[in-house]
Image (cartoon, rainbow, N blue to C red):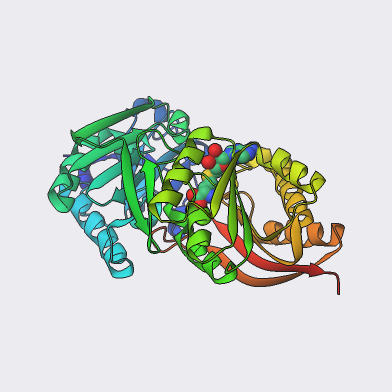
Length: 404
Ligand code: SAH
């Protein structure tokens, strides 16, 4: 399929010393690290298979290349005699499935998480017998028929949808499209998580329809909400809001700027028998917080789970400001010993910076913080220790008291 015998793949030579990242376990090669005299990038088709060689001809691995992308090549295997073929795909998929089956009793999870599961560029979310696939690199796009047939063979799904409409594809010069490539996928799918059922829109919702990465943090929220008032900002379809209601919250207000997401919050509240507890407000979260502050409203528990405010490194300054404003506004409408769950899914906001903003904001509004728990992406988003980019979700659960 991909390349019959990898030993025959075209060589991609790295410049002197540019093999360090790969040797340390990372899989990415940047275009300025390639020796384009020995191996001109322009000679490769996007997605072609290559063998990585150091400047002194040492074999580093096999993988694929895309001359149009800044990250121009990625390693898939470090075994010289392993071909990038169907059996590799089957094996990687089974290894990934093994982790999920160990962790979860129901078939709702991120089944495959790119680099961390051994195939950069492939994301698969599982919704029971429906698989929603995202391909983010030319290398995987080139083998998409094999990916689909392998999934059919290993997972025996009822439907496979390619949600190939992510921004990452533009960086690889790939077309953006959504296509059901096998079976038929209903417009809305049910997700079962932490004892709740959520209806989501797989073909048009955010990401693949559901954010599996927050599963553990949603479950933890339940420990803090009994008989309390809860504000869920950036609620999307109610992941945190419904958990809070099921955890015995007195009231839950879900705020999102998407009316469509809030319709699903209402539906999800109803399906879980908590519609009397959950209400919605369609508004920009910053505006809603300002209005609530004006109205002198207070909440016992606030969840802040915004979209990535720092999608690219160059957005860092503006993004830091946005996180800080948001935390400040939230602390101002939090009860005297309120609980704040604050999360960031920006890879470019690292733990130390996140911690610093939180501390600084609390000082600024004259509140005393107690960090009770730290949270991160769930086990279906494993972290590759040599690829820092695979770790992105951070959360703190804190108590916010009057200053000591
Ligand atoms: N907390 C959710 C995921 C949040 S996704 C969960 O647990 O599943 C981010 C959400 O923020 C999206 O639903 C999007 O519509 C919403 N959003 C983005 N910008 C916003 C803004 N400025 N104000 C309010 N909502 C916003």
